[in-house]
Figure 1: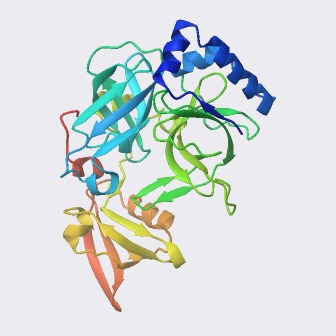
Figure 2: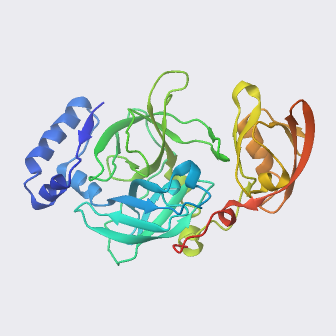
Figure 3: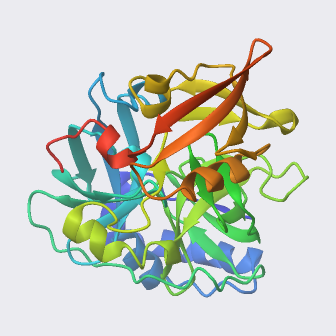
Length: 344
């Protein structure tokens, strides 16, 4: 697989001025050399990059996510219409300051439009009116393993990659997060956060979320996990109109956990969250949810989410220092737990 170095602002300036054509032609020749499926033209590649921006955010030190995600965050975003930029939500959540950087180096303040914890997507827009050339949403349910795809971070951030989808399997994150069929790709791109996965027509198939060590199950295969774009389609209008989804809101209890050794161990309890207020502590081993035994994160989350929407009370039985204890936890909408910035 080939990594494409398109990393400097000078590169973009030369691209839009026309003097970059020779270098781009060489890159296109390399594309064709490594893959007989590549159908990428210099005009298409230049057009794709004009829709991708760099995102820079600052988060207050008292934010709920400051300890786990930091107070300075950077990533990528892609225009999905004339105004709105799609990214991965952890870059922007609880941000008090957001800037987008265009491929020509100009920076503009931006504001949060919407965030969805269930999918992980976030949407922002520039405070200063900018008319973007958007890329269309593709169909992430139809990806051929022999198809060349592109992961394209913003030009000023660095390297784009030709990748292949190598797996579609469930993912359970320790932060009360589950995806049924994310997109796993190789080789790894180090600038994955918020970067779009595109097919050769420039359609968005997913948004970069994580680095993974086993993109192929059971094999050392460094790669990336991306959130499929089809998950966005049913909630897109809600995010733009209301800032959040309006239905199927998963109840949140505020813990981080690990399911190694076929048991669920609490690793962190979010301060002032529902589990914290109920008395759950790190190192508690979760035995049951509403009387049903759980031994992996997927089963644990699904049992919580099956209890109803946010506001329902669930019963957790845990093992602590050899004793079995029972706690009643009043769940919340995670959006109501975050520190609200002026962007909302």
